[in-house]
Image 1 (cartoon, rainbow over the protein chains, first blue to last red):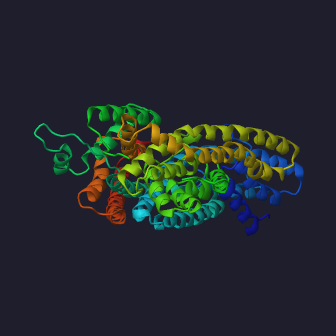
Image 2 (spheres, one colour):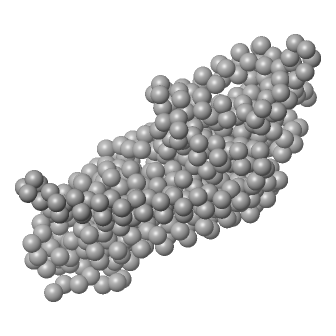
Image 3 (cartoon, each protein chain N blue to C red):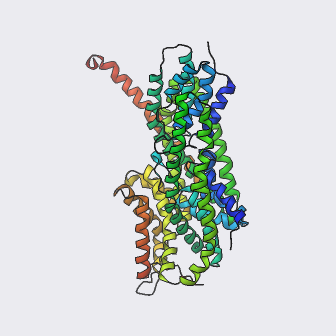
Length: 270
Length: 282
């Protein structure tokens, strides 16, 4: 009965934690990170070079997902490889099937939960703490983000190793879905506050009667122009499928026309 | 304000570590050092002006608050935004005699950061393409069964890609760019159309960053209610971000309980239906 040592599992985890994207190319995105993470596992399970070659060939298939949540898959395959070495009914094809099947769904969950929600919430709070050039915001983000990810990924790796195929339940079960939905809600509310605090769109337009348009707008709903601009950009990207870069270029045109028309005026001079 | 060779070299090393795909690793490189908020602190320390660094980094951070790179396609390059854009923005703001804390200075930084970030995507594709060479060496090693070489391929050789695509461009552009501010100042007056447009663009750009994020969570108009709930808390009630996060968590807990209660109800209902309709199911 072969059993992977704690030391080997740790080595595999750290190799993935650091090296999941270091040798990225468009052709093989995380494949080399994966191969390196599996190497300590394979070396401990098989003594003979031919068997090592055969085992490693499983992991030469293309791999790409959200690498932080993808740690779960690496842990799972370490567990499955151990089972395979102990002659349990599992082969390379089954391992690769699981890997390929999880890549897409985990990328979706990771991109929306980690990159699209957790990071913006932490950055939003960090921005709030940075007022006036205070370094506390950046320090808060560095400490909290790295601690959450390091322990989170370590947990995912070892859960994946212990539970094998069943580990996926943690992420896609009914309860997980409800938690995800609720966390996204916090993210959306915080983003609303970030938008209101950090977008400052003002008009310099003077109304025919002599009043300032900006004051009138503030009376209706403060920061109205900022809110409208966000919805407008969202509409262009979501409903019209325009790329972010094109939206930015369009804003350059709008700014230029707005300045010519006197709608925008930053009011500066040397 | 000038950037010395030593300072440029430090910025260049940070560029190698922080990019996607970078040598600081995904979590600490790309998602920590590469975030403009953190880079503001780092660049501020390197250039000896932490306050300006943080304020300008934060202003640029809003545009890139949700920089997702699905399937390895990027619309902006973090190393360029953070370690070329931020130093240049600090030089520009100080060279023009603006106080970094003003909205105008932040608009200018945002416009510069976004321009550099978009142009910088060429660095991303350069690095990724050059890594193909090391991967080719890696495949040869796998065929031979010389697996130890994989570590060199994955974590050593990509340094060469980064020296060429991250380090050298950062050193050259930051050193040359710092001197450009004087030229810009004499040819482009602040009250001219060009500069007015630049500042206006900078004030509009953060809206794109927020919209990129909302693209993922807001599918229909109704979903905007959650967003404008947070917006109103800050805009009308003047709550700060921590207070908003706490209020948001409160509603999230309620939301979670509602969903779980609904799930339970469905299970019970489905269970009772199953009992009656066993035969029809078969």
